[in-house]
Length: 504
Image (cartoon, rainbow, N blue to C red; front, side, top):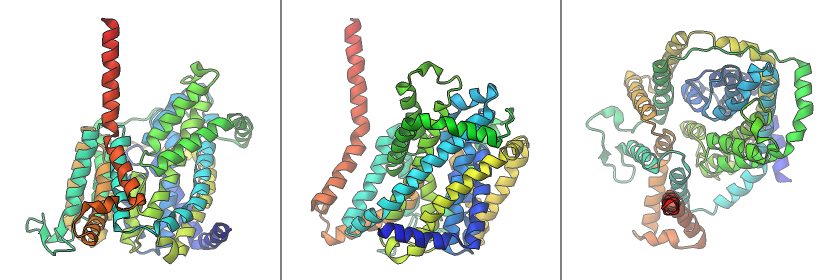
């Protein structure tokens, strides 16, 4: 098969000494990022993205993707040992992981979590290997109308599938669109919302925005909450690993269900967090002993970790093939591709085969390296959490400032980063989602360009979005996703009225 040949070529790219070194560095940094509450995959990649400017794009994406894998693994450590989720999707892991640690089974819980993460990510990478080329070939038939319809579907999916109130998602997205519109109009040449500030002629730099929104915003919130860590100790030895592995095959159905849920939620903009909660709920409902969940049931660790890693990995599929990120981290990686001069989408598979297949091969290798690293270094990562956060936070802020300054060697960018940091803090404080805003900031320009090209082709007629079955079905699905929350509200209203009538 052509995919196997391309994958073998990808391994020849990924298995060079520099790329293996970047892979190990990325995994190590990623685990550290995942362990520290207040960072996380998207935040860490945003902060460290400036380090890749002097690297070739293939090595850069390998290191950044391995930071992502490491962060996915690292989030389980704090969840199980300290009952503090290192990542949002690790919340469900605390339900049974921490009780297992309290019972003296921390090593077993960590082994189960890391192995489940490995399995979920592995199946997602296999899916990417065989599905990505097919999707890319299909997407080559897309014109401006089809691309805008897909981008519209992405925006509407965030509204329809988010756990946040639709009004908050739309408000965050509108702000992202407004920020994306700042600068010089590429078609008419007019200035938009620059207010006489020459530094804004090129618009808001995506990297400055995400460093502030994710990095500084999260640190400000975490400092306000005043984290302190009191957890359990754990040391994983080969005997515990082998014993845990021997018992995991009995949960094969949980692995399968969670992988399917995770891959689906990753490809659609559902994300790893709802995937982990959904898989935990399904596992509990399907269990012969649901009462044991929440009391140290190992299946309660397997389900969310498998789903979270499957979702986190498969979110890269639409990013590579369509230029549509399936998660906040994928959105940051998409920004990285644009900074390196690469255009995500179907042509990437034609023009940049070394890049694409080197990345896919590194996913297999990074997953294996990540599993080995976390299994052998848990005590070290746990000890880091005993460093006062008042020491860690200033270090992270300095790293953010250096990263922002290196983009254009301008102090204006550092001040802009701090402004975005305050915005990110306020968003989190007011419980507004950041992901829709970042998505709109990344895709706003591309969506506008696709829309205007479609309007030029149709001489201003919106009928182009229903001109053929493909674009019509995508646009129709987008409208359904946008209106989906209204269906939920109507259903809840109907049920409430039925209950009221039943009580009368």
